[in-house]
Every structure is written in C-alpha cells, then in structure tokens.
Amino acid sequence: MKNPFESGKIRVTSVYGKRGDAFHKGMDLVGVSSLRVVAVEDATVGVSTIITDHGNRTWEWGNYVRLDLDDGRRLYHCHLANRLVKTGERVRKGQVLGIAGETGNATGVHLHWELRPAGYSTESLNISEWSGIPNKIGTYDPSPTESAPETPSPAPGKESFYVGETVKIKQGAVYTNGVKVPKKYLGVPYTVEEVKPGRVLIAELYSWVADEYLEKAAGSSGADAVIRVGDRVKIVSGAKYTNGVKVPVRYLGVPMTVAQVREGRVLISELNSWVPRQYVEKI
Image (cartoon, rainbow, N blue to C red):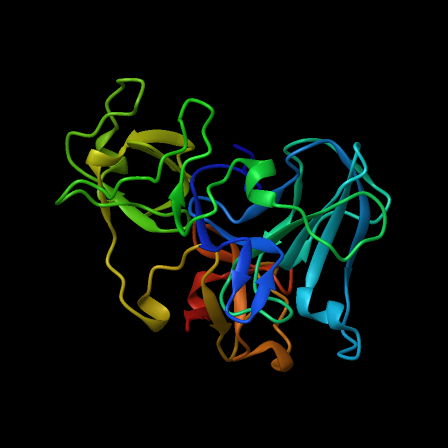
C-alpha cells in the first residue's frame, strides 16, 4: 500500500467516486501519526503553487503540489498548509512535499490525493486501485508487514496516543530496549514525536517507550489544551516568536494550523515559524 504520509496509519474520510450529485476525483486522507506529506515514488515536481484568483477553479486546491511520475501520470497533493518543494525539482520516494492542511475549498485538515493520466487531462484515474488504499471510509495501516485491514479499535481501557500530544512516563517504565527509564524522567510532561503499534517516540528523550508506561498529561481547552499536529490554533496578544521577535498584530487571533510540536514551542504552518506554547491557544 502506498502511504502519502511520512509514517503511521491513515484515515480515509472521503472515497474516490460518486459523492452526492458530483464525482469525487480523488481520495481525502488524514495522517493519524503524521501530517507530513511525502512522495510515494521518484518524480519531478510539475507544479508547486497556490492559486488565489477565485475566477480560476484551481483556487479550491489551495496550496498544491503536482508530481509528474516517470510513467507520465500526474499525482496531485491538495489543501497543503505549506509546500516544501519547488516546480521543476526532482524528488525521491519518501521526500517531504509539505504539511497537510485546509487551504483552498476545504473543511478540516486533510489531503486531497488525485491521480490523472499522462498529458493534460481533467479526467481522473482510480487512485484507490493504484495506491492499494481501500476505497472505504476507515483507518488503515500501510505498513508492508500488514495486509492493510481496517485497524481495530484500542483494547478497552487502553489509551491511544497522537503525534504532538503531551504525555508523562509512569513509575517502573522501561525503554523498548529494556533499559529502565531514570527516575528524573518520570512524571515530566513530554511530547509525542511518533506513534507505532505498542510504542511511542518521546521527542525530548528521542527514545521509544511502550505505551503501557505512558499516560496523557492534563489538558482541556484553550491555553491549557493538549496541542497536536493538525490542530487549529490562534496566537494570543503579546506573542513573540521563539527568536524574540514580536508577532505582528495582523497574525493575532487568526485561525492557523499546527505543523509540528516540540517541548515548549509550536510550529505554525502558515507562518513557517515557531511560537512559544504559552502564546498559542487551541480553537
């Protein structure tokens, strides 16, 4: 199965095919563990842009990257929060193209992924058949060791964790290599960097810990809420970037998207800048 996100499971939120009175030419996908959109094959960037003229219907794609595959077909990645490649650039499989967002005509953070035949064409190909992602709403694991069934729900009483979430390590914890976690690291808020079955990568320690030794840190809403990659947030009055420069007034209180979360700071997709966590509120 081809995974357009850097790692982990993916959630299909809208399938390829008829949607109401229209035909949906691609699939709408959300990265469960990562929102970093990657190339699934070696290719050339045919287009990397955003159209703001509403007289051109392409504006509905927002930030988008079109990859021209070596077999001539064209692969579209739409609604990105930002783009990390340029038109004409040669990219390799696994290279990050941008961060999934909701630019253009979109509701909620997601990736519209669409495949078209070689040459200029407005027709689409069945991207589900090409990618191996089931054309059915649900959550799937693209790992090559899996047969890609719909992912089962967590066992009763077992917590699930998400990239960007704040967690604490419990008493008696050991790293996945069997080494005991030092006491000084227990009960301290940390950030989830990556999630895989049964284990979580802690950003600040850059170490894997079994999920049974983790618990969610306190957080509810607004300034105290747990902020995750993909969340919609706003920057509060008096904010400064992490380099100490004051955030311009025009950016305050405006809905924006979280691209990354690190200890005490948040990367804002639309600004491509880090802001201390204390100045960011979840919407």
